Image (cartoon, rainbow, N blue to C red; front, top):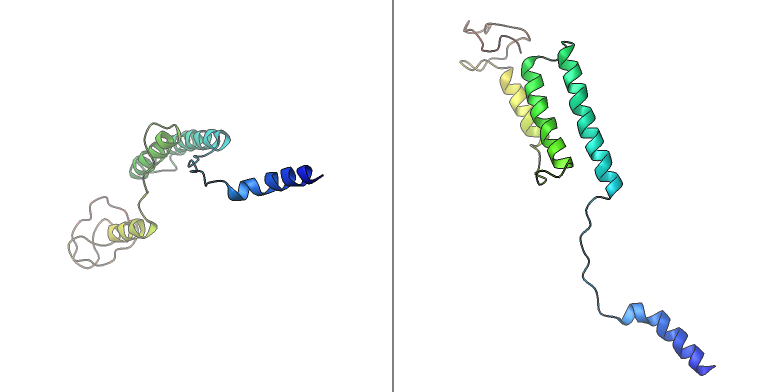
Length: 126
């Protein structure tokens, strides 16, 4: 009986007394990786359709295609993960595009000329 108690106690206490093992960092599971690949490729197909039907401008299409291709390459394991630009940086860039580069005044959407200084605005639309 004593032997049975000692063996049971040993089995119970062994996980608590053994030396710590190094944990191996785990990446995404194969199901998560497969889902990421499918979503990235789906987003590229949808982007192509949106551009073909005229719902996206050439500038927006080029910008989004670059972003989606980077995500697809990352999902396919072709490039290591890298942080994407922060939302604040994107907002700042969008606001800068809505201002006249010459005088800094805000211009209305679609304006070809700055309402304050009269200079033509590159791109023609805001």
